[in-house]
Length: 256
Length: 284
Image (cartoon, rainbow over all chains, first blue to last red; front, side, top):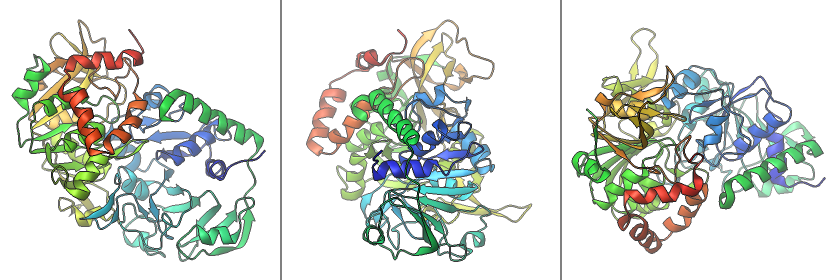
């Protein structure tokens, strides 16, 4: 079966999750990946959205983090203060799954402003739950499409801390969690180098060239000693993902 | 004591120019009808507080009613950016808006501190986050027991909190169900509490641990069926996702925005909300 880079990204991201995970889900690309995992190989995964829904199992992808579908299908729905205090700060979340507007090679995320904070060129929505998801989740997965605008050597604003300037920067700030451990894009899988913590390509998706990689990232791409090829999506993965997207489009009408 | 009054009178009595006002709702139960009433009455110079300012705050800001916004995520969820807010922040149109920006964890803790009568909230947050450098109200305290540095933000104490809820009983006790967000904390933190409800019933039929605001913490209740639209009221009607998507186009242009506000807000009434949710109702 043929597949799009977008589908490859969602499927590759879904494969990172396990049934045992308690995953704090960001809206957009992470939400699609987390629900695909739940509908394929990780049926018992606990998905948490910041609106307070714990153990949610939506039949369609929510447009917002607080669609009624999330509450209807959740094990329980708690208040937002409880969500952030007991469940996130309390250390119950194993994976925080985030997207980004700008990302640097150390997994630091900007979703706040393009340009200067006081006089921004573009005012983005801001951090929401992300600053604390990034510091309190056991580890952080990031998923976003590669582009020179998004993958920048230096982000304009540190909304959510990844590995800072690398090395043991997180530990020096008192963080005991792992921070970003996986970056899943439409072209490749990346992992931080064990020492420098700079993202390194560990696998290329089928057919992707190193030239394409260099053309879609505004930092110098480094590769692991052994670069694997991501297994192509299986027919089952593609069917489940496409059915999920079709149900979502039907449910949201003009919105999808 | 909760007084059942018409929305126009409730807003006129409890929301005044220059106040700090929170219209809370986390995607669910957003008090749009009350926001529109504030716009119709032209109550300005407001400090608007909300974790997730979305379309209703975009409208209030676009109409020039806010001088300050305290928030943690300003977007149209699943759709994109808030274009009226952007115009205000990037171009001072129609007026400049000062911003005080936090994370969700900080805002949630700050409302809780307000409800608890504390001067500030203490939590583990903003580690490595640059907001701590640009928002002067983000500070730190040292735990007297462990020596750990913790984040501190001032308690939120709105002059008025406005929320929408499913129903009230005849005494004015209010039930909130579904995604309850931060409304209970925002209400208990406020000096005045205004609630719009879908309906008034004889018996709330609430389970033992339901989220209830007793009548004696509420100042005014107005019955406005559909009053959350295009947000939703769990058990009554669904979120109008196409309306949220359409807002992106309307808000993209100053003239289109003004024309839309004229037609759907300035020349409308709270009673118009019932018809807007009629096709979205999940129960009659």
